[in-house]
Image (cartoon, rainbow, N blue to C red; front, side):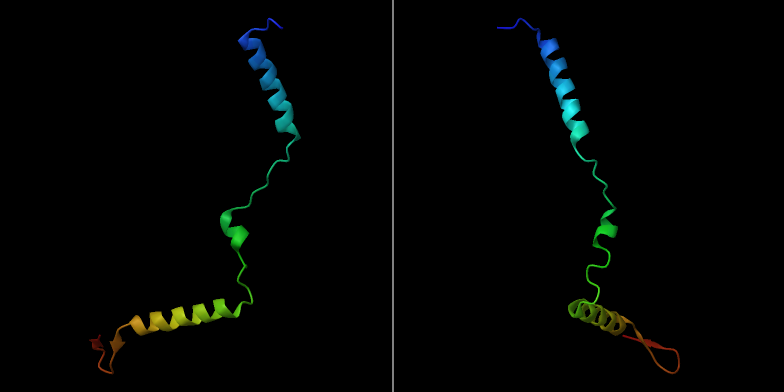
Length: 72
């Protein structure tokens, strides 16, 4: 049985860990918005959702009559 101290054993483990970390590929991570940008392109359901949202927002605008009065 070896008589290595705890510090020596930890130092060896740290070196081995460093070697392993260097072997791993470095992740190149794009921002989240770039990862999802365009995923709904040419999707009829998305186009419909956009149209429905536009219709809803238009329906929420107050109506203005010819005199410029606002009615709810």
